[in-house]
Image (tube, rainbow, N blue to C red; front, side, top):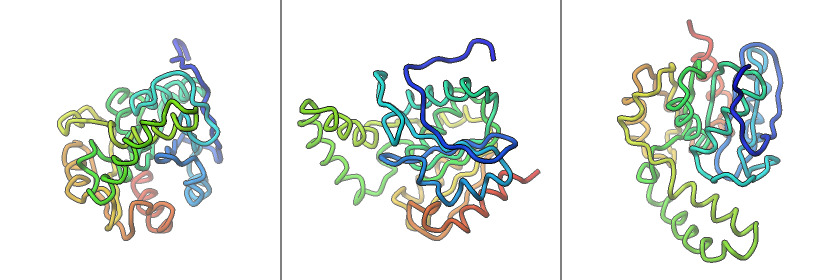
Length: 233
């Protein structure tokens, strides 16, 4: 592939299966093992890549900014490094935010998009969840200069306070067929999830039983809904 997009690190990943690429993007503070119930199930139909985000799991932190938009550029570099011209992308939580930004910036690289528990900005998160994160971020920021570990902790919390900051109307940039999926008791407000779905032209909405972590806690239902979406004509 000519003109490959370069970045300062190489992302760690696990892969399984063959066929059309399906990229799995985990949430904040997690790694690719979050998708333990998806990798095997989806690999019977797709070439699954479960990727560790920059500074998560076994992927190095590097020197670039620690932002959702940088992570989207990291994903572009990953696809170029692996000669993936176009892929289905499934993102959970912050991974959903990465997938959302990626689909806005690089629509020609996305076939179908699944946004699970994504949010446009911190106001989309229930206050009972968001307030402790904001308090933790303020506290962690004071100690960020003490060590690399303290800095990374502050950066992780900062992602949930400062990112992704997408205006609803910007979602019109997403051209891929999209499944917006969340749990019945998700930490993302129901009206916020529905707003995201309403602003993406070619989207479907699915609310299934469970909390924010439905892919891990209710995998049979989650996988069924996702597979139906990915294999529909």
